[in-house]
Image 1 (cartoon, rainbow, N blue to C red):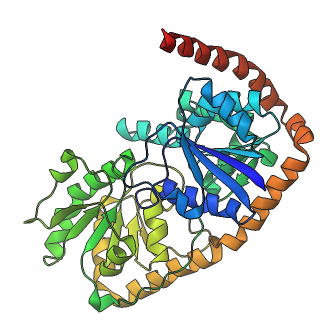
Image 2 (cartoon, one colour):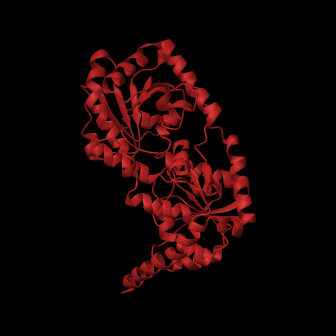
Image 3 (cartoon, rainbow, N blue to C red):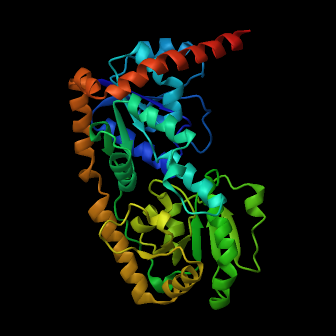
Length: 404
């Protein structure tokens, strides 16, 4: 039996984040190939963490900057090691390379953090994103992490093209692996539904900014649809989020959605004026799966529709956003067409069988030709050499300091 180690920043929470759902899908792919999986994290398990034991996945806490990890990884002797983002690769990648040099190292980027970071900065400065904005400190760290790994998983076609065309990355060390989806047709029809919704984990800054955008425009929608409310769902809502709650205005903060499918099946339209971000947006992905039309921004819809019509409307114009939200809420025929458009996108672009077999094959090819694969990635070899020295001795210094 092959052995897989996953090193995660946190234990996956598929009911809280798209990243959590992505991790479960990734583990399921390895389980189909009879991998024994162990999930390691410096974080604590929370009440919202997925029950890994339900899939016979072992899990264990690890400590940062401590050589106990060295013994653990050496004893496990994994065939494959997955890092759930570039920061975990920075922290533990050099130890993996030193203790189990023949393990295939995979980085699951989730989304490109440098891109999200640059877009957020441009948003806060109220300016258009420029190419120079992308070359930030996060960019340098994340690109180095990608180069040090044998394979990096890219969740968005836009991000895949950005790395290959703009930054000239070798396609051989990248693999496009989006979220997997299946259509889950709802039983509730247009006349049975009411209200708008928005959803998103509030630990994620773009989701908080999205709610602030909705608060700003909601009165204009409410004036045209007096009976409508907007229900805001999301895990980890803080006091500042609940302060936006206003029943008289119909702006209702609901907090965590215990059953996303049920919530989506009761609502009429999802609103997501996402101002910045990266990757595939889980809320919009699920809105297509569950048949809930939406209105969103170009960043929100990025890399999802391909050549298909969107399941609602895409606009960055505030006035047009309000207009389309009201139109979609009232027009049953348009609503049904939009719902069907979402189903087509899921069926034609995100089915598991389009990607999983090629992903498994790619890992097998790298495993069987690991030395030649790494030799082709000479920049990665250079970075690996220097990182092993700099990161290693910084970590060891911290380790000694902690002992004192």
